[in-house]
Amino acid sequence: MFTYSITDARAQFADLVRSAKKGVVRITDRNRPTVAILDWEAYESMMETLEILSDPDFMENLREAEKDMGEGRLVDWEDVKRDLGL
Image (cartoon, rainbow, N blue to C red; front, side, top):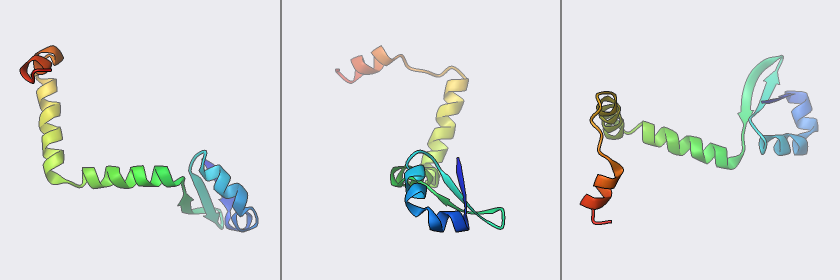
């Protein structure tokens, strides 16, 4: 993670943008983190993930799938392909 003070961020904006393409940039104000800047693709990915994880039906299905796996209720991939005619 890269860190810039708000003063440095203002003065070095182009460097800040380049840093954000490599990882999250933290902007501090009076030595306290106040803003995070990240690459657009990372932002979109996070937003999509939040949308998926906010879906109660998806989360219920995910919990059931994890429980099934933990209890050994699995289907062999070759059986799935055969059942689907692949």
